[in-house]
Image (cartoon, rainbow, N blue to C red):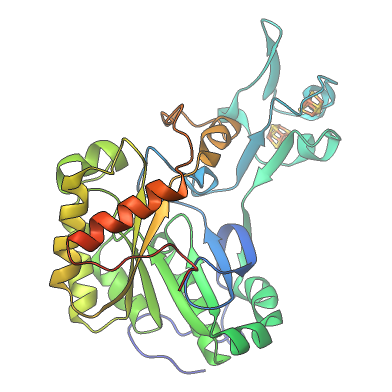
Length: 319
Ligand code: SF4
Ligand code: SF4
C-alpha cells in the first residue's frame, strides 16, 4: 500500500488496528460528492451550528439516545441500569447521563426501541467492508467514499488510514470539512484525498454566534487548500431568516470568485430534522424552533442571489 504525505500509512498486516468512532455508514449517498458514494459519518465536531442536522455527531464518544415519544414507561431500563441513570422525576422519565458508563444493558432491555447507543468504535477493516461492497456502483457512477461527520479532522489517524485503504483499492476519496482545524491536519489529509467538500456556514460578523467559532481560520484553511491545488467543492448551508442575508451571499461569492479552481458550489437547504434529534441526544444546544423547511422557490432564490454575484451554484446531486 502506498501513500504520500506525513503520517502513518496503514498496513493491517503489520500494524495494530487503527480504530475510530463513527455514528453511521450510509450507502448509496448521492449528496456527498460525485456519483454514488458510501459516506462514513465520524463522531466529534468542534462547531455548534444552531441548525445542526446531525447532532449525533457532536459528542466524540458513543452515548445514549432516548426517544421519549417511543417510551412506554415499562421501567425495564430502571432495573437494568447498574448506575442509576434512569429515574422518574415528577412522573417524567429523566436520565442522569453523567453516570452512564455505556454498558448497553438498558438498550438491550428496551423493547420499545426508545433507547439506542449512538456511535461505535470501529476498525478500518470494519468500515472498509461495507465500503468495498459497492465498488461496482462507484465505478459505474464515478462515485467513491466520503468521510463526513462531525468533523473527520478530529480523528486524523483514522481518517488517513481510511483514505489510504480506499485509495489502495482504487476508490475515489472525498472529505467533508468545516475547515476549523490546524492546517497541518488538512495538509496531511489532502495528499490522500481526491476532493474536499468545504463548508462555508456564515459570514464573519455572525459566524461565531451561529456556529460557536470565529471564521478567520476557516477562511485561511480554504485558501491554503486551494493554493495547494486540492480539488474543492464549496457547501453553503442556508437557513431561512438566519444566514440567508445579502451580506452572507456577498461574502460567500467574494471568496468563491477569488478562488478560481473551485469546481462546484452546492447550496444546502435547511431541514428541521435536527431539532427533535437534539433532545434525544440530551444536548443543550439551543435548537432553532419553528423554521419550516424552505420551498424549492426559496432555494432557487438563493441560487439566483449567488448568480447575481457571479457564482454558479446548484443543489447537491443535481449536477
Ligand atoms: S448504558 Fe448502562 S450505564 Fe448507561 S444508562 Fe444504560 S444501563 Fe445504565
Ligand atoms: S425500557 Fe424503554 S420503554 Fe421501558 S421505560 Fe425504559 S426507555 Fe421506556
